[in-house]
Length: 199
Length: 199
Image (cartoon, rainbow over all chains, first blue to last red; front, side):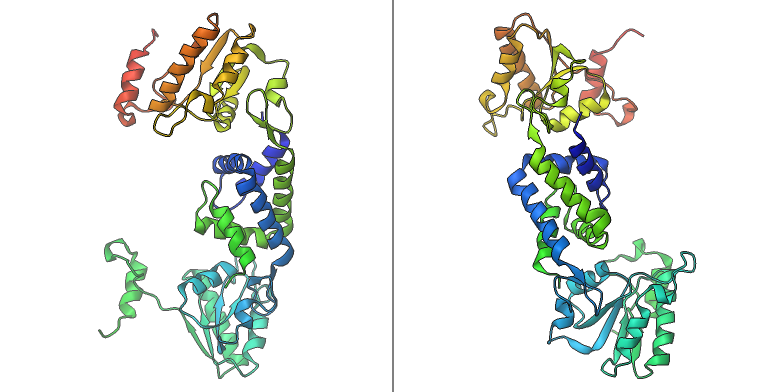
């Protein structure tokens, strides 16, 4: 009962992460009903992003500039690089506001199962960045999954070979802020106990 | 850490029903990462809808044609009109495939609290459609809320005055298909009991 234009828009919106067919339909109706307040600005914003946003040639972040705002910021620390799996993780680190160095987006994690090797990721570029002498610390902010931890170990080994002066660390594991023991899995409780600190 | 273009797109997407700031960020990343497969087609689909989709002058449905596909379909029954609150409800009725007549979108329901009177809705246009002699039945497919039922009563009264030959009905109430008694509210169980039918 709806034309092909509406059906096509609904299908495309339903493919976005977090939206299904039902919420895509609601979104389409919302956009049609608020043409000037929602639909027209959304088209403009999407066009801006499509025309202007590119991956940063240094770290892999998305920005309208290359190098990106993080890589170009003179106040940030050139001697530390935080390695993340994808841009979403970089943004999450920045929202936390806890890291003031540079970033390196891997573009994934190593996976024997999916046939992802070091050269499918930006690991060679990371080695080149670490070998230039300015970098002193690399923080591996990868997920606490099997593939994430495997990737962290491989990167640590390779960096030790090409840049022996660089300290490689990974994120601490333990109880998340606001976490209650009763709701934590055994692995997290064990990791938190091993990472115990004097009060 | 993200440019104003990305922030603006995230804000606009987060305003869509069903998306919050977090899923909007994920959607933006998905669109940037799949520029040709997702972002460019989405811009095209939004532009098509913005340029071509309009409300139908007869029933209020959204379509690229006016009258819309439902109003223009010669196989549909001119003698029955289904009255719905908004276009989402019209689409839901069409998905159910249970009604073969025409539609009339009210654009809301009467609400003393929100100051919505009959002339704020398309009730006068509905009266005009019903007074032309072809319409024999009006089905009020409005929500089973206080405002929905008030609106149904007001419309039934007004239609009886201007088009006494028209039969006005409203949707049956009872146990939803797949519904278990244990999980139904008291009002629905009462309505289902009053609407009991011989087996």
